[in-house]
Image (tube, rainbow, N blue to C red):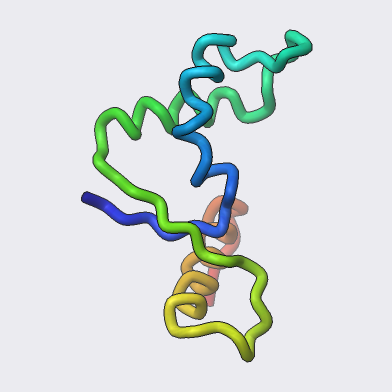
Length: 90
């Protein structure tokens, strides 16, 4: 099993919303297609292939209250965001 640490409550709760999202073809109650529907579809496709578990960690802590795991998560999170934006991390 792969363990993924995240500070995103949306991601942690996504599996519990899957049936409703798929049943409504990723549309809101008002009939509007939800934001990021393509990403959600891909997420569920991957989750069917990979056995993983999310661990929710509190984000946006003050530096003085961060433990070792929080500091590592901050570095990984920053690197991932920069990679998505196409910037270099030094």
